[in-house]
Image 1: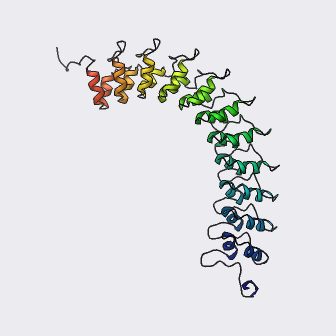
Image 2: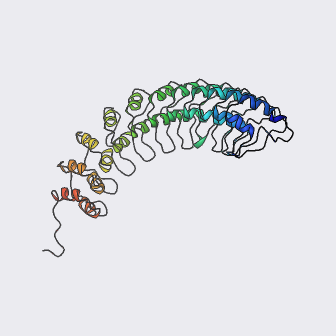
Image 3: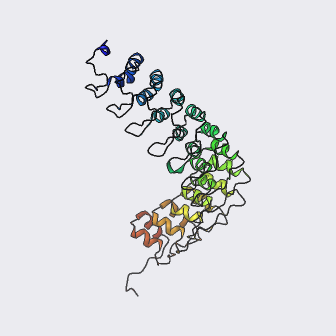
Length: 389
């Protein structure tokens, strides 16, 4: 056998840049790995040309037998990162390889809470990717810290809620040392993220917890309900409306209520659901004096504009604090269909200027909204030429 020759250098890289041990590990050759590990002149922690340790390679390739051989060596460092800053445990975690994760965790000095260069722990990554088997394996370690935050100060629970991984959320909620209300850097809780992303099942799981506040706002003052309405998540909105403890008309730090956000996004079904609530004010002004109707017109949401025009208590010509009416904003944005709907209302003054004297027609001309200009000219009095009697 070649290893018996005195002139053999078993740790010397070949033309490929890999050592014999590295090649054997890559190909899952357990017998060769065992023979090489018996040598004193083979470094089992040596990085290959790709910057990976033999154990990291075994974890990447899913060679469980090889991983056991390497982990059986006391001088193998199981936490040594590769040049990408990834440990073997992190590699196996990202791949969702629960079998490999279990093998690595059996060795007591494998750090289950060691973050990568981005601050993400193995549990955070497993929760983010929805790898339930890996999450279970990691939670089986007594020294695991299940609430350790990662990117953006999101906890594993918050990340699982963000991604809609209900199974992972259930596993984490079953732990006494996981706080379901922990906010991230933006003040957003797991419930807020689940509502924001439209994950109805996760919202239900979180609200089944006694210590979850359904109205907890983020740093901008937006509640979970507000985010669900803003993004048009009808299922979440319906579920939250069925909860007595949820306030469906809470404005954010800018005075913008859920109805305004739904109208701005053009989410007609959500707008209908909100208008059916007795406590929702369809004319609530934000801090700029703008109504939900104005926002719908401003953003060109024809369906919502038409819906709100059908209400007796909505003023289609109410200006904001700068004197800009819904028609002014629709003309400015070039939203021809909305302009048509507004001009069909007798109560809309097509010539009303803002506080700077700018009329809808002037704006439409300035921004070359030709279609809007034509529509407005049909309803406005032409300005006489300069110097005319």
